[in-house]
Image 1 (cartoon, rainbow, N blue to C red):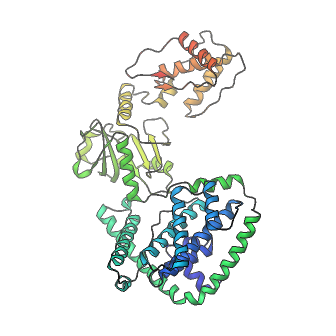
Image 2 (cartoon, rainbow, N blue to C red):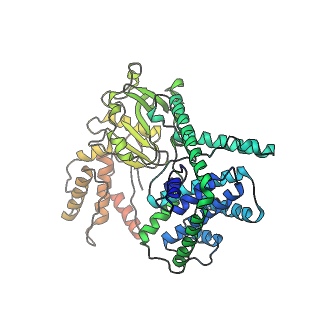
Image 3 (cartoon, rainbow, N blue to C red):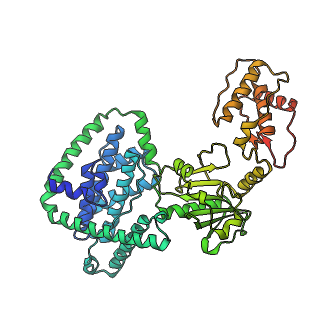
Length: 509
């Protein structure tokens, strides 16, 4: 390949990332980008070729056999295999349909060509993340041509193109905004806008250089396409053997939604908090008594800012750290010691525990959330599917106040009283002691294996009783796979002494 072609493709801000995976994809994307304003019909054709090569590359990497050699056949096969979710399939179809119209009816629609390039960028990132496993937050860098709108005679088309370009610039600014690295939202937006303008200017220079050489280099791109078609046809007829686990991993990644930038993540976090019953407020309008639980954005601490501080019953008890996708959340929530400095003097009276200002901590990207309870002995983080309700945290706070020596369930597991035999068989005693010892070491999973007739059901019921009474477990799931085992378990529960009533409701499932 000509070195000029290689350098121009790799330097494209929208498609350079694809060069290591598939050079031809990078080239078609860069060509479509460069010709948006000068030859939108050609741009639409090249965008369609981008979609075709991308579909071929996916089929080759997954090792699929496809009947038929049209793009619609490839897309149908990828959809049936679960690679293409509806949104991704629509993007591929848009490129396919527009390419056919441009090839047969000629479409000199600049706004449409610009949108096709944006779709190519979106699909290219989707492909990159599905293959590499990375979660890349990269927004489309719109190509520019100051005279492009002036050359359009149709006022409606000119207005549509101008609106599209403004929207892309705003989206790029939003994607480059890093709230956690700035002293204020205005400062973050100012930095992001300046960075977006630099990227757009750089893209404009790259496109001008590519456009100047595009006719000279077109023959090389055509040769690469011929080689790609031959290789794909061979792979289609005799698919290569692919490790099933590797294939399933690509499909799983392909089905994920696109990663969120920080602005999008904050909106999603707000929505998740409200769904869990929290009142979300800005720091300029703090009212801790607006609800049972109040989450305050951009809260000022003694050591900086917290993305969200959590009030429960008017007391500061928790904190949420918003992260960009790709951050290792487990370590982020466990190792962040900057919260130990606590709050400013004017908020100190509202802190629930002076020795642990933020006992309940979360780290989240809006799609993934980790939680740590700092009151646990040897506290460690774990993934949760949602934020806890304010009522749940209020229960934890009340428990910690009532039982300071065992403020949490995990702490209580370390102080369960000695097991009395009470007619238990040696195997049952060994099983219960072994399980409680494992739980006390914070091992969340355990397997008890006992012979038929050894009294497994009575062992499980006895252990359930001890967890409810001594560790104050709220509920225990007792799962069986046959009706007679369920009846047997119920009989054992009815014969076993029940724990004394407590202030919180408990039930055995």
